[in-house]
Length: 115
Length: 109
Image 1: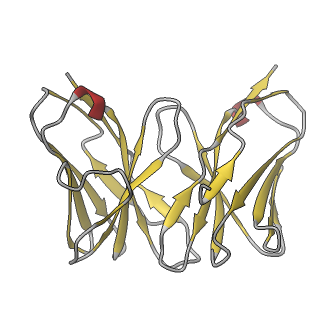
Image 2 (image 1 turned 30 degrees about the vertical axis):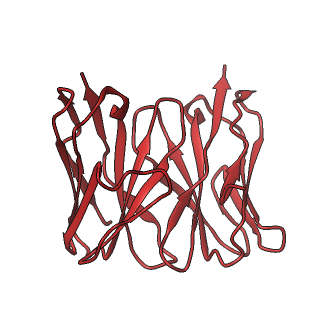
């Protein structure tokens, strides 16, 4: 089946630095990718929808200047957390979606800890 | 109102019990529906798609009620390994994938 690879699986960074997370679809072309964030014991929250070749669409309350999303190709989307702070520590997951009646495929997730 | 709503639980049930979860969605134009399972600190994994006529996969039965805009998941003969968070997922025509908050299930011996 389709595979979505997310890297890194975990990262620890200092407050104020930026962190880039990559999401790759390995065997299909993902015109649309989604980025989610999940805090402990909470649900997955959609952050933004990323369409290849265009600007990402951010959900209400998500700072687009802080969470930079780039989707330059049909197989790669990146999320950059800029000037990270401890409150950005979370589990970030990407997913790539095929046609409307097919499941969403998830990356393995990235556990970000900002110290 | 949230686009997809679930009872967060937790549901605490003994082994062998039957348990059911419901999920309501607000967008009547939603086109496809899924149940995902998420284990602690892991990414969600597809449990089953939900078809209009209802579908069954072993101990799991999923149903869709478009008129009332809800989907359900029934788990029979619960196992300890069924303990997880179950996520209701709805896709709209624009490929937007919306997750419910999840229902936590604990199956106890």
